Structures are given as C-alpha cells and as structure tokens.
Image 1: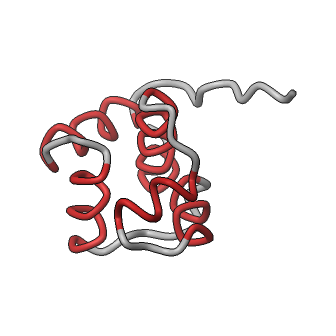
Image 2: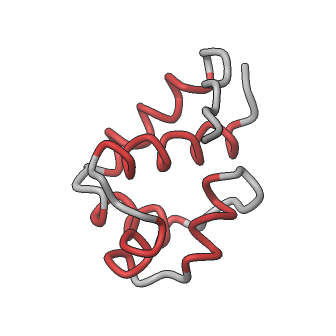
Length: 84
C-alpha cells in the first residue's frame, strides 16, 4: 500500500486536472493558499478534516467519494508524472 498522504494528494491533483483547474484556481475555490494545495498534492502536508471538506466541495465531490478515491489510489502503483 502506498503512503496515504501521497495517495490523497494524487487524488486531489487528478480531480483538479479533470476539472481543468490550476492550483491557483482550486486554492481560490477552497479558500486555501496555493502553496498549501501544492504541498497536499505532493504528499507533504496531511490536511485536517475541515480542509478535506473544503477541498471536496471545491472539487465537486462528496467527502466520502474523495476518500474512497484516495483509498483506491493507495492500493495502486503511483501514477507516472509526465514532464513537458
């Protein structure tokens, strides 16, 4: 099983990209700092429940759905990151 913080961050990043949002746009929607979004996506920060609720709302997901996605991602190999 992968690190849960990293898996949660990957889930946030994947959903953000599905919606075509930048980190800045997501941070504005969620009322969080862009650097904090970046740290969460990289698995460097473990968000509180309040932050998880804000992120789920900003991403148009129920908290339970977002956590289920993170849990499923934790059981899979890490996604490859494409460099431009």
